[in-house]
Amino acid sequence: MNWIALTELDQLDAIDQTSKDRPVLIFKHSTRCSISSAALGRLERAWTPVDDAHIAYFLDLLKYRSISNAIAKRYMIEHESPQALVIRNGKCIDVSAHFGITYTDLIAQLKVEA
Image (cartoon, rainbow, N blue to C red):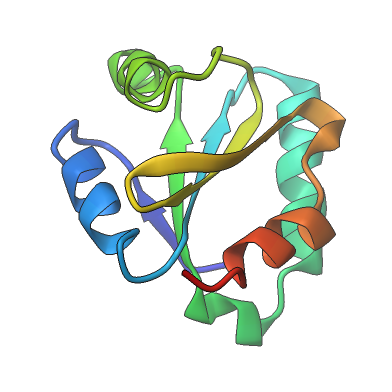
C-alpha cells in the first residue's frame, strides 16, 4: 500500500480539499494493539496494485494522539482503534472499527462517485 503518513494537523485540511474530487481513506492504527495489527494486516494483504490509485492516509495514533482527537471532532465520530474512515466532500461517509474494517467495504466506498 502507498500509505501517506498523517503526522501534521494541517494535513486534515488537505484531506478535506482532496476529498472534494475523490474519496480519501484514513486508517487509525495503534501499534500496541493486536486487533489493530490484525486489521491492518488483513487490509494490506487484500490491497492490490490497482488499489494504489486510491488515496490512503495512515495515522499512528499513539504518536499523534492530538491528530486522532482532531479527526474525531472534525468528522463527528467516536474515537476507536483501529478505525478506518472514508472522507468525501470534507465529511466522513463511512467509518468502521476493529474487525468491522474490511477491504471489500472500504474499496466499495472509495469507488463511490461524487
